[in-house]
Length: 227
Image (cartoon, rainbow, N blue to C red):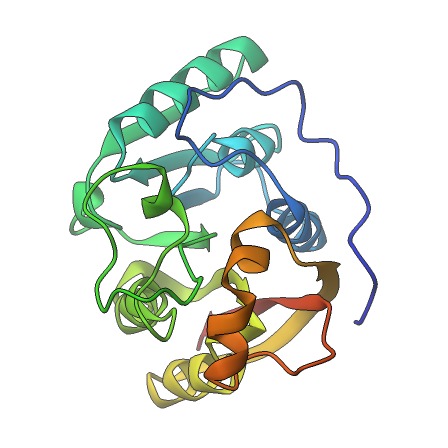
């Protein structure tokens, strides 16, 4: 599916602490993919890098048992507040990727990780840019999620992962396929460059990641299923 900017999904009235990633076009695109999954009540779902908790709360409304993680304490607090305001139960733990739920497997794993290429080789350890900076190729977190996905998913479990075309859609598909998962791009949208990419356009163009006349960013949702 190819669209312009995704229509606004009803993610509810969300509150965010300063420095926490607020829902944007990628969040809404992933929300659309979540709705297409027809999540069964009682399913076990993990939201990796939950941020505001928008997707965790949306999924909890289906009757799923939702767990969530974030490396930011502010995001953990934000998610707890938003779940309480929505009257939904979301179990949120602080930590890196899936580690707070080590040993657990899930029917569905959803993630909107940092994926923006940055000048620094490694992502920042603190500050608001940690929500989007992901190393020089934008894959520092995406690659780790791809490598962990098979151990997180139950048989026929599904990973839904959103990221920018700037960090390599084919690389993600290849890694997930090599890990034994059936994968494909199920949602795609083109959105105007936001403030972060706009500030980096000269550097991104110099690296050949954005063409001289491109003015939109490609976003994709990749669906990967364990056999």
